[in-house]
Image (cartoon, rainbow over all chains, first blue to last red; front, side):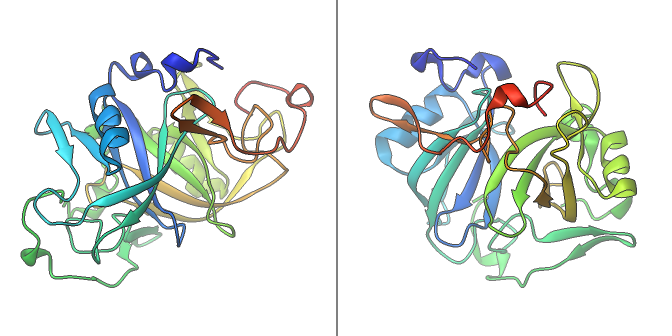
Length: 132
Length: 132
């Protein structure tokens, strides 16, 4: 365990990018997993709202920047190895997922294949911007 | 969203390895994040117990193989993009974390640095095998 508090989390362990889990602070639902670099974590801490790093767009991704579905961050946790981040958030709006579901984990693997197990909370065509 | 059920999750999106979150099925606590390859997911489904892929040891990692702290898997979920796995588990034993905490996320980031926010559940020197 890295005890140097300046390097927790240690972004070098993920070549600059670490997975960040967003969990609903009230219900405990796991909402999504995205990635953070050092700048996005700093912005998250500065603003109190979740800011990730979009690997596809290769830039900071202010969650909710187009949809308004921002995440207010209550607490930031880091795991034993210092290579994973857990955000406890208050999710604004009905859906964390760009597909219109509350959580991105709306499918379960069954012997017959993936099966949708959640109700859509909002029509995704009314959400602007993929991944918001 | 990939609608081909044969390729959900799609391991090619992570060059063969995808992050897998383990969440306590009863309490909702996020216990840990590890990685899975296709073989570890197949073993998890076959055995009903969490099997990850250890990046450091470069082999399948049967969670609890040395500590006995296995994870019985109640449900396997996959996210919208098909590149993250969520396991709902019944954790056997007091600790998912090799440091002796129930959850690997036992530290919060504070303005003064990382701070331990959980009680140790077990003396880690009594747990054999790092990461078990």
